[in-house]
Length: 270
Image 1 (cartoon, rainbow, N blue to C red):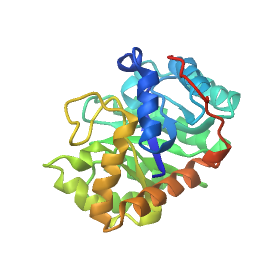
Image 2 (tube, one colour; image 1 turned 90 degrees about the horizontal axis):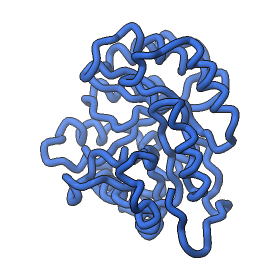
Image 3 (cartoon, rainbow, N blue to C red; image 1 turned 30 degrees about the horizontal axis):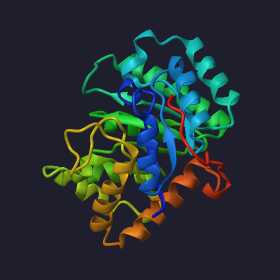
Image 4 (cartoon, rainbow, N blue to C red; image 1 turned 135 degrees about the horizontal axis):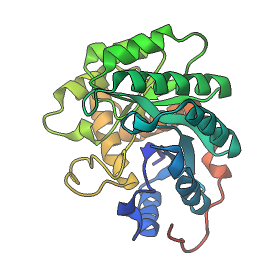
């Protein structure tokens, strides 16, 4: 099976002891490429270290909306500089809005606008975090001039909200939430997304899908998300996997995975 996990956080401490084993499992599961999201420019060297060891990992750089308390305009210049410093950078983010855990709306909006501008300047897609802020995110994106590409990551919105972002040209990425017993709204949303806009992700180490719920999430488990999404979309699993992988490669402009050189034996931990 050919899978792309479009959103991971492998630099987190929870992977420090056994990342090599985690990598063996994702390769065995058919995960051929991964996009490593970024919460703060300060962690970018950690992301690079992961990608140095695992060539199927590609990078994003940005500032998470829950980390914007220290936002200054010079951070935008830093994000832009980092994005152009490494050819493995395929996106800006994760950025966006989170009104569930924070109420600093003005500063979140300022940081989001700045990162939208960087993405447009560099012709990179946005990885958008949006929690309890769909209307505000929609309105901001509608006001943006020029070409805009991106994905609503770990999407949990209603079908109406989903349609807003599909109409804006966004891709929609579903995580392990899709497999949860009480996630009817998310499954209803997944049913209306055009097949050429679907992505899958783990958002690991968070939100492990059924049957791993309660455990640390990891990229191999994206196969469970794919299986549930295949059922919702009434597609054979290999076809759903192929479709979402093609979508991820198109959005992030990932190379053909056969071009990647993977270590022939052994793995180094990061």
